[in-house]
Image 1 (cartoon, one colour):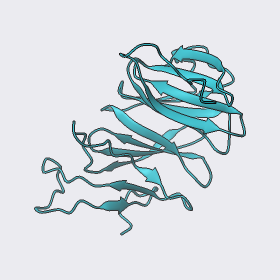
Image 2 (cartoon, one colour):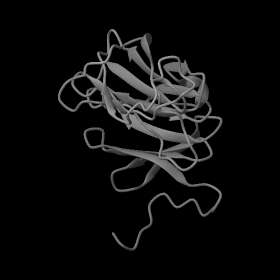
Image 3 (cartoon, one colour):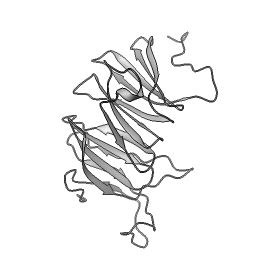
Image 4 (cartoon, helix red, strand yellow):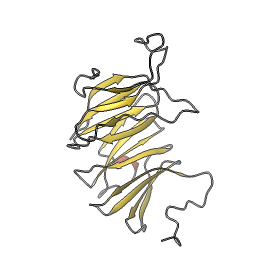
Length: 196
């Protein structure tokens, strides 16, 4: 397929910022820097493009258990959960999870797909519980965003629903310790307490 360019914007001011493939649902989703989200077939044919966020949609993911369920996160400080079968516009989200800062990522849990793990651009990791996506835990964690540092994104362990994230010590946080290590931290998703 070297003769076809997928997702060409024809505009240097707009670029793609997130991508996920849903093999069971035979679709691809991509988020753009202007807040648009594009749904395509596996062959690359566009099904629709819709403006789902006010600013950069930097993360998109399908739920591996429910292939019709999708999550997006944005620098507009919102995470939205969608049923891709019934998206009309940005007001048709199943859930809107408003954060205090821009959001880097929103991962569905790996084993059951019934939890959501979000990471903002300053110091919060949040755990939500489906099916209503209620906030279960907010973990204060040093991972603030810097211009020259790749965004830190908390993820789920691939075999069990345990979140982990990279630590970038922040002297402004209450529990800061002098010469604190930059490390990978694992958490209990129910209590938010460190596991290691």
